[in-house]
Length: 251
Ligand code: ADP
Image (cartoon, rainbow, N blue to C red):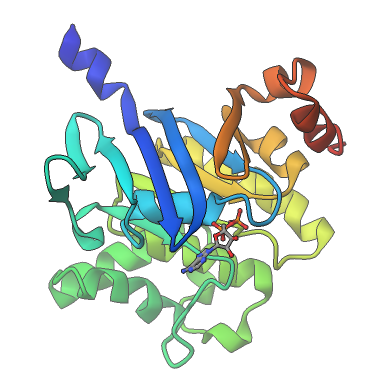
């Protein structure tokens, strides 16, 4: 029974704090993310969302606290554990998409497998399959400059999923798209999450994005968790005036 209960938690954060010099950016963040869930880290600019995502992904190191993925300890300052980012098996998509400009779409996706030392034939096959699954097969031989913003975003997602990560981390992946595209991209992203059975953590400052896409919304304010709940809970029963004001801006 215990083993099953533990497996239900994809990510467990306990007492995560982070300071840059005298600036405390995260203060004792404790949080769980359920396996297969879509969780948003929501809050105004500068509240610590990206820092928290980077700490989960191993791009940044907390000043204190513990992280586990399922039952695996990933980071513990007390026990001296710090699994490096490349062994955390995470898909990462940033606002900028960061596609290689000199590589085709197929090569961009395949590169994620190349750095994981997959043989050439397997890389080719898995990359093509991933592009087909995401209905991007027709773009395989194009270069990033020949793609729209929405297409680049989808290719960045394909590249981050091709090596079957245990966790998908998204840092404002929709904020470069215009309003109309963004609406469609939300639905698309959520459908990818569902069909691949992913666990996804999204950083966003956009209330309506978080509310429309997520199973769980985590409201951050000045480095602390102010409220955790379903979209309906934070919208209908905000715990603080600040949450009410921030979430109330969504429509
Ligand atoms: P958000 O993603 O919510 O906009 P961030 O996590 O990017 O917030 O930043 C939170 C705070 O931490 C900001 O005040 C930012 O200036 C500060 N910060 C982030 N990274 C660094 C760094 N490497 N050095 C110093 N301060 C940083």
